Length: 383
Ligand SMILES: [Zn+2]
Ligand SMILES: [Zn+2]
Image (cartoon, rainbow, N blue to C red; front, side, top):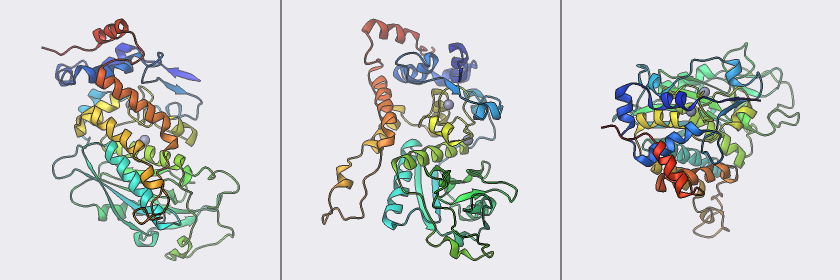
């Protein structure tokens, strides 16, 4: 395992930038916000909120895809990056195909995803478009000759989303539980996006714990050659069970991919939701939220109070579960399902620590003297 440890100076430049105008904008953050953002300079130290990136094998993203690191300044000055404006400020989610056998649970699941994205991109509105079946998209599909599961063609889905995109959309994101392929010669793809058009399509099929096992129920029992345009194979087709892990992985993928729509590149600075990922183990290793550098990128694009965003995310994880998990009564029909947030536990604790820092500017377990030293190290307001 290799640890990518940038120096505090490198991280400061990546976050604040050496250019005067950007440093000036940076100085508008409150003292507490700056202290939180600058925690990243001490990554990996005991009690630090942010950790350095670790590379575990040659198949990890950073080893396999050398990319130019994107600091805050290069993001900010990128003339191709897209920013929501007054008439394009809604993120639309389009579900494609079934998300589960129980219709009500499916609806609930996509609502959870929507609510999560709304807290994550705090200040923007996130709306669900009415779900469509695979046949309604008119896309091409195939049976994968190795894994024998159904796959749908990403290019056709992007074309469909392009036609569906509402006028006030900042972006439109298609999600599906069916596996995807980008062209005949490819085995599969997790997703595909057109950043300039503000649209993307992503599959959660491979986030099923059983996907890579022999017993995966999405494999068709018999070898069939479905006819083009005959979508009957999708009727009653397997969808993964909705578990806490699936919800966590879906939330992580959605927000990572929507992050790209703002022009945020793959993070090479610190452990971050925007780190690239080549395989499931690597995406599971990524945290659920932004590092300080990527947080500043989304902050400048959307504009919010950092503490309010963290509170909204925490609220999503802690929402009174008794309201949805109680026995069936007149006011709580059986169509209510408890939100499975067990897998979000680490994230929940992390958010609480961030909020604690933002509210008190302190490390809760720190002595006053240590905290005074730390404050002295935060970037002061420029005159
Ligand atoms: Zn990515
Ligand atoms: Zn980052």
